[in-house]
Image (cartoon, rainbow, N blue to C red; front, top):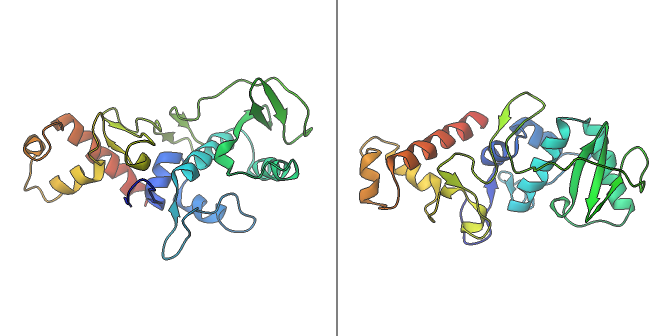
Amino acid sequence: MRGGDRQMFPGPLAATMTGVTKSQLARWRRQPVILAPEYGTRPRALYSFRDLIALRTFARLRSDVSLQKIRRALSTLDMMDLTEHPSKYQLVAHGDSIALVDKDAAIDLVRAPTTLVMVEMVDVFKSFMNRSEVTVVDFKHPKPRLEVNLNRLGGWPTIKGTRVPYDTIVDLVADGDVTFEEVSEYYPSVTPDDVADAVAFARLIEKAA
């Protein structure tokens, strides 16, 4: 849902980009809340860009630890008066626990809150296998010819190296009147390979709906 620099990401797109299923998104926004969509739930849930980062972090954590421990880690953050949006904090799995990474230190949030621990850093933006053993797309490049950049259309996925939204291209070829090769007549910088990746990404989103 594009609208200037403040993008609103609907549930199926959020699910595809984060590795959290649509049903999980619904459960996680109910009490006790893991994360409530920043732009509300009526008439449908709409997530912010930073919501996506937080959800992806939780999905990555969920591959290694229980949901109960994620809730406990979030509760510990509250007790430590760390009450900013969850995307502000770097959370990583540490064995069967969760640690908060702050500069060069890592603090256990579950087993022994405030205890310093050694952790292995994880790039949450890279592709990973979620708890359902589904490969989650690379966040910055959900397809090789697509990219996500917060400073470009507020993080809405675009054709790589352009400001052309992926779904604009998908809509253009949807009815078959415009072939992949003919898209460049409308958008000179968009190649048939770009179109193929945009369509493939849209199919992933449809599957998540």
